[in-house]
Structures are given as structure tokens and as C-alpha cells.
View 1 (cartoon, rainbow, N blue to C red):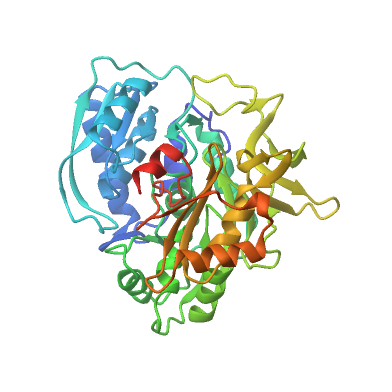
View 2 (tube, rainbow, N blue to C red):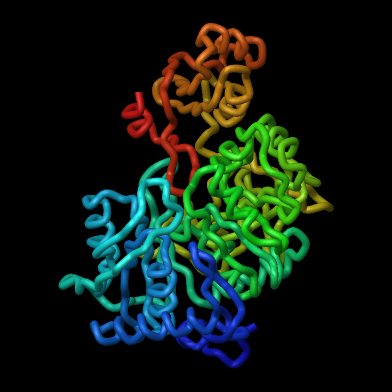
Length: 462
């Protein structure tokens, strides 16, 4: 795609891979449309500002901005300079941000000096400021991007990706073909641009492919559907299971002939929610399996193999002692040497699963650490959790293991815990059943919409 570019150090990849295209082509819609000529001018202006602040090729910068034009232009400007960008979720507390800055040691931090919009805003109007970090260091690696993992099961990891890694992922989206938006179409993205699905699957792929990236005004079902209705072009929704639940709850959605489908990342959508969504909207609901470490890994964009998925072009997968491994030349972890995460050219996903001989179809069976031994008998906590979540009266559930199996459940107003427990008794063996039950108002989620399974966090939700 970018022949002749010395990736990952040459910043020209930004112009050739992301910003190229007709001047008048609308590439972003954040309230108002932004064409490529305007985006190029804004990126150039931010590049000048960052350079004036002292950022140079080989330098390092952290972005702590809400979703906004400021986020997009500062990120592209950083890469255009040839520096490394670390992405910090704007929803982190001040303490968490300072911890991340101390850990990653960027030379500069771009923060919001002023921002408009409430908690449900999907994008913001931002006036940014650049702050020098006296303890910051230049990048010691060739990574263009550093992201922190979602932390759904414990402390986050710092993950580095080079420009060539990002381009390879964009190429995978292109090669997947059918079900992936193409030039002239629209992507209404509900996924955070701080994380890999929204960043690469939404922003970077959309810029490269010539598809408009649209962010709804608010993260409500009404605003999301209004964003779809705002343009006549074929439109794909991009989000996580939380967004599907939100949209599936709309009793009578408007007719949206331009809506061609929705693609979800993260956890597998519960069967009841999947069926309710498809019944409401009459479109395909596709599944995508990926990791921060390398982006999109496998897909089932038309539900042809549900719950199985097919590796994306160029991805090699294997099951080793029940754990899914992915061929990856180098370790993606920054400042971490852990052979249980990466070794001998294989990324260890920590996900349990299998690869079907012949077809190559992959079944992801949940986190490997969700498998525990109870009295010498193996219990897959994800199996118990999915069964529990599918019972009448259960709006959400998480099953974890400490000294015993515990269940955290959100119930509908009319449901009783006794009925739920009785329903589970009919469906799973006695040794698999939770010994402790906690009824909560809500289940904590990561910024990417994944349910948190860290017991210390769950205990605080009670």
C-alpha cells in the first residue's frame, strides 16, 4: 500500500495512507462535515503547534482528549512529525492519568483546556493545550502508537504498534471485503477511538477507504438512529455489545433503508439480544474478534458461522493446550518480557478456544482464566455466565471465582432472585452453580464496553 516508505519511522505514511484523496471528499462528520482539504489544513496547523512546543521525530507524546476533532488532528499531527503517540482515555481519573504518564514517560501531554458537552456526548468541542513533562523521555522503540489494554480482568498492559502494524491491519479490513464499508459509504462509529476497534476499524480504515466516519451527537439510541438517518449512503454501525443492547431495546425503530448492518467487537452478543436486534432492524449483525495487541483477528460479519469465526486474511491461528495462539513476529508489549504472553513468534491470547481442521473456523470459549477446578472437576465460568445471562429476568450477569463461584446479577424489576436461582438449577450441574449471589443495579464495564471481572471492582458495585 505504501511502497517506497521506510516504515515505521517515515511520517509520510500519514499522507499516503490516511490523508490522500479528493479535496472535497467528506471524510468526517462530527456534527458538521469535514472534507479532506480541511482535515489536511487542521492537521498541518496542529503539527506546527506541536513542533513549536518542542516535539520532534523520535519524540513521545500522550493524548488525553475526549473524542473530538482535536483528538484526531493531534494524533495525525504527532505521527506526521514522526513521534510516538500514547492514548489515554479521557474518562480516567486524574490519579489514573498521572499514573499512566509516570509509567509511559511521554515528553509532552495534550490535554483539554476547555471542553463542551455532557457525559452522554459522543464527541466534544475541545480547546487543547500542550504541557511539557519534565520527566518525559524520547521514544526508545519504533512504535508509532502505545495503547493500554482494557483491563477487564486485571491491570492493563502497555501495547506498542508500529506504523507498519497499523497499515497491515488496515489492509486486513480491506481484504476481508464483503461486510466491510467501502469508499462512498458511511461508518457510524459508537466505539471509542482510544481503543483499537474505534481507532483502526473506524477512524484509520475509514480515512484510508474513503468512507465517512460519523459520530452521533449523543450516545443514546435516538441520537444513534438519527445519525444513521442523516445520510442516504449505505451505512454500517460499529460498536460493542452494550450498544446492541441499547438499540435492541427500541420497540419500534424508524425505517432506515440505508442501514446495511452492524459489526460488533468485544464479547459475543447474548443470543436473546442478537435475535431481538436482528428482528427489530432486519439487518445483518456481524461479530469481530480482536485484541489491542494486533487489532482485528477473525470475523463472522454475516452470522454464517455463529458462534464460530473465520481468521482474517493473513492471520494464522492455532490452539495450544486449549489456548488460542496467533502468529506474531515480535512481542507487542512495551517494557514487559513475559513468555506466557508472547514466545517463539506466537501471541498467547489467554482465550480458550479451538481451531477446526480443514475449515480453519475458530471457536472462542471465553477467557482461559475463566476455567477453574471445583473438587477436581473443571468448570468454565463463561459457560455458567452465558447460561445465567440468558435466563428470564436477568438483564446482565458476571460469574467469577474467589474462594467459591460467585454471581453478580442485574435483575429486571419484576424478577426474583429465587426464580433465577431455580432456573439455573435446571440448566447446570450442582458443582457449577454459584455459592454466593450479589444483586447489583449495574455491572461495571471497561471503556471498550467489556464487562469487568476483577473481583475488587465488582465488590465496589454492590
